[in-house]
Image (cartoon, rainbow over all chains, first blue to last red):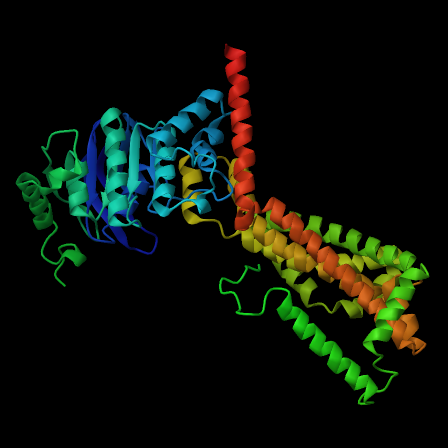
Length: 253
Length: 285
């Protein structure tokens, strides 16, 4: 996945991002951190082909992105599950939209739900599940797309700290097993450092890359790593790159 | 949409509370008659109304009229439901259709139906057709407006998800927009059905040879208030039953809005998946 000189200006004249270069290799995990409103979400939507960029080019697997693609999967802050479908049916949605569901699809979906500790809840409806469980169903749905590029927009922003840690572990486990390129948008520095091979720091309005911090920690990663000195140093590097007035993303307030 | 209250009233249950209010009103009503606060010719005693109601059924007189009103109501409602949901779905899917239709839907709602009733009756005759048309016209708007509101309010994230999965218009419609609108459609149908009944009865009062509205009109012009009130009680009972029927359909079709229905739905789906997987295993081995 490669972006060259990507910019986006909305109709109202707001420039969300400018001259953004980024490339993510298969199997690589890249996090994007930045203050609220720095265009992170817009960036993901441009990569996903949901919103057209105003300038520059976006390529996935060497092809220019002109609209939503089957090999790009997206996950949001809210799980966006369909309340009239069970966990299993929600996970199968990406297949259902494309073609007839086979028995193998059902088995694969069941396997994913088991992988995310949702055994016994396959046939439960979203309103019967906890927030963390719903997010895991959404994660399983993302895996079910089989997409080579996974885009996650603050996927665990709305759950509590402990649940978040579990969900991150799930995500790590899956990522370390597959050769997908994953892009995670977050505003939690420790989360970004723990998960990624590289952390991209974005400035706000117009959003552009302020710094790129490689994370040379070994894999598989574990939450305990967050307490090592090396980790703390990396987190500090990212924090410094974000600039002095954190909430304004480096802009003097 | 009604949701069960989360805070249970202490002491007064779901049955006791409304019964207490009802009994108080009946008592006051009876007192108004026996103490001659209101004339017998205006307000009969509740017990007399009850007796008259029983006689209406016992003599068999009411059945033909009841059937006529029920037929007009259901036919008018069916027409309004089909046209209201259909138009709203089209208006929800296309902004052009929406702009085209909306002002007329509002005009129809603003139009006092009672004023057009005589015109419609002279156009469609004294039979059931005019009543059906009037019932349909009255019931159309709530069905239309509720369905349209439901169609225009899908979850933004879910919509984006469907787009990212490259779901076509048809798949997005049946898989997302229609189920999202379903609770609102049913809210519209509930109101629509009660209005269709009111429309049919009012049309019968204006001019008819049969029907409950006709019966009320006849009894009350004879100053036979016991029977007039009894017919009103029958109309009310019919309205409640129809309202309940839509409520039942709502619980079955829009099951995910009713927490109590989820476990059963879960079990049914689990059985279905297990059966299919088992069948697949058998066919491969």
